[in-house]
Image (cartoon, rainbow, N blue to C red; front, top):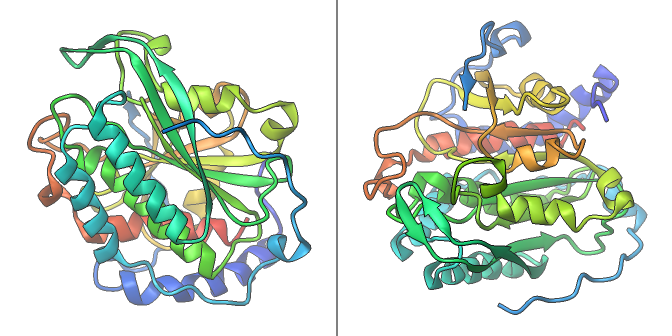
Length: 334
């Protein structure tokens, strides 16, 4: 559903949310912009053991009210450290032992923050991933829910794919996105948004062939397991994918097949420069295809893309913080 609510309500919520970010992002964040400056006029085209789903629980009223607590600022150094730890594991093809190791690392991070975590198994076919033959098997989505979460009540999904192409250690693509949602998870436990936020590290986003059916297996499976009430309850989904490469603006994209409301509202809420774009190459498209409003943060081009040189050194902590700030301010004006 659209998110253009009362401007007075948005402003009051944003004041509380922005306090937590200013000290962390001041050194790396461009000066605040006017609403008209935040957009570009010509967007470029860019192409473990499975646990049963827990029964829905009743969300307490306090979990849907704006919090008066203030989160500690976004810790770009902590996010950069997680990027490095994931990249050190090496290439993380979705069905590999390395991927399972990475999934355990991320699951532990969410668990330590107090989330209810489960691994959702996803079947993945054999295929060819960027010129390399890959085996079939099973991967997992790592799903982290806040205490008292009810999937049939209004909520937001933040996602980032955890897998890589076979030859890349995947620091920027996409340990960067995973690290940002983990840091946002920490901030949300300290200062919950009005709507509960479900966080998902998706498996098997990278293609294993040509065509839509060979791509984004984890997010398509996740969406496919939601019943009608659960789909309706997802008010918005944001995919963070390749969010760590330094740039003058944060790309905020929609998939071009549905509502642009989420991308529009992300840019409206942002206090830093953003760049409008169309991008059909991430997990947000799985949601958009079934009528759930969605957007993608990230997609700055870089020479090390999908190569063995995609290591932690290509990731800029300032851009991690800026990407996180766009999502954080938006979450607190919904």
